[in-house]
Length: 330
Image 1 (cartoon, rainbow, N blue to C red):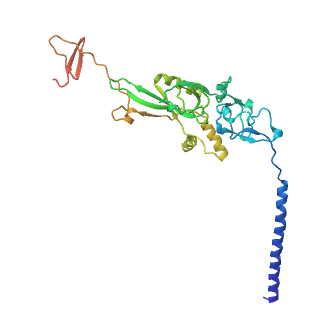
Image 2: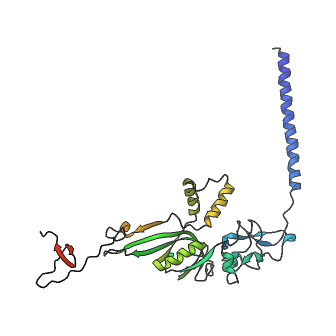
Image 3: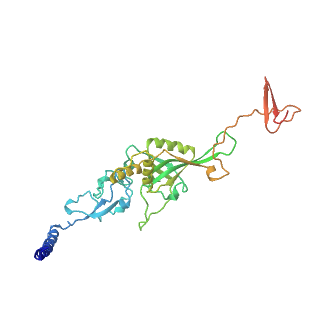
């Protein structure tokens, strides 16, 4: 290659590199002030109460469901909760009357506070019923069940059967994923001066059920004793995975569909695929089945001069004459 041509090519490349660096510095330096100038300053206004997540109708509000956030002054309405007028913990235990999207202000008309008329009816979902059951400290998780929690309902009973042996002791989970509406007519958590939850005992629990499940619970209260089992929040996702694995539902296509399906599962009581445990599963000295029925044997008739046989006998009837022959006798 000609040396002169090679030098011209190297010079052209160097000149192009210098031009590119100069152009980048010129345009890059001019873009920053333009962007800064186009950013408007945040409008100043009071802090209003907004929902931290979507609150469907019937949701029992907890302290972490709402928070204060600055709001444009020109958009503040009288129905909003403004900071300083009412602290957010005062709304704990209230029920959402109208759905509130995440990030939107909470209005006073969208909430029903405990003690207001129609409070319990507003807390119920469409087509649901409220059922109250009696519990003790032992059967209510020592009072650590609060409104808004999810519980399973257990029935413990003794089944005598038709035999003469000891009855069958059995506990069965009859309903899963029931929402607690109130405990002893309380619909919120009691807190002390420092905001800590006070655990109090209670004797009655009001649950949200379907009409059919409410009938089952009414019958279950006559069969034995009822107790509550507190559910974990993570159980909703596990329930979704179980139903997908069993082929009961199809896998959600995206994250939004999965969240919607989780919300439906979280609000749905389940009275199918129940489980039970018998006394034989706990102790080797207990029964695992119902005592079988035994056939009635005619009572022995005392005959003068004949001793009543003891042990197994065979009853022989010849017309109106009935006799008993002990087993092993010719």
